[in-house]
Length: 341
Image (cartoon, rainbow, N blue to C red; front, side):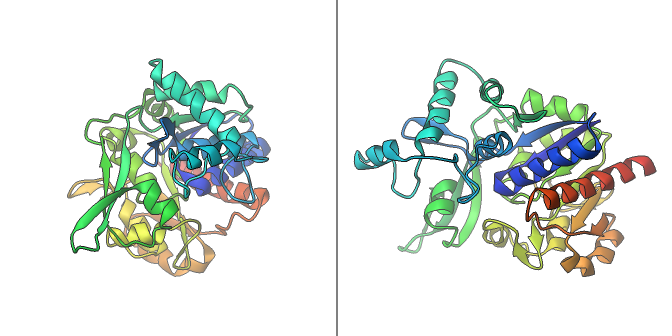
């Protein structure tokens, strides 16, 4: 069985780690491919930084700092202090010394002509990821910028990392702009994984800047629509609040409520026509099935009526066991849809 996950950020990384555990327990024959958001990537101090890919890599390798939720465990920051003293990097975005090793290696390979997919494959060779393969959503640079109001009454843009890390998404976003998106194409690894998929799962990642960026890459939505596998989404919203991060600020910017049902309708039913994320007018959505938390059970009937098979299950990933149970519920929802088709 081939399982493909669309993911970004810490929530996506923890979900994939739980899925890997579920596969070990119940589906040892299964393989996992993860298509990872690259819209958060940026250049800093001459280095190409890929936050979501690194979160997946470090989490699956057992190298993630679980206390901070990001970066390498056992990290030091001597080089970062020097870079900040020279004014090369800002004080609000600290690169750990071990983490810098990854960024330097990545940048060296990219500058030598390797694609991001080739770089990701090389980075994965260092650690045992337990049978999980990571694929960047695209090999092309697609950097997200956030437009906000200026003090003078106009507008100006910030790189997403500055808006997210420095300002903690407290500056109301007027809109998001993914620069380079029109010329981007899905990576070959992402397309091959989707073509071979038996189940596709949309992780509980930010629906606007993570999943939204992945599915907005020209050609990605067509690839998703073409897969024979069922597509199951897991809500990143529980009881009107983001499970992690500041997805509420991103949803507000596009006029969508912070609500599990609203996010499902943003993605849209695959079998019908809806205003799905990344889709043009009157285009089919993404979802065959959707999981919400038990606290949001009231939205189940309405979503089912809209053509999205929805179930309420525990969504909190408090530890590895609960993350594995959630991943198994998502997988079973997909397998049930596959059997019914």
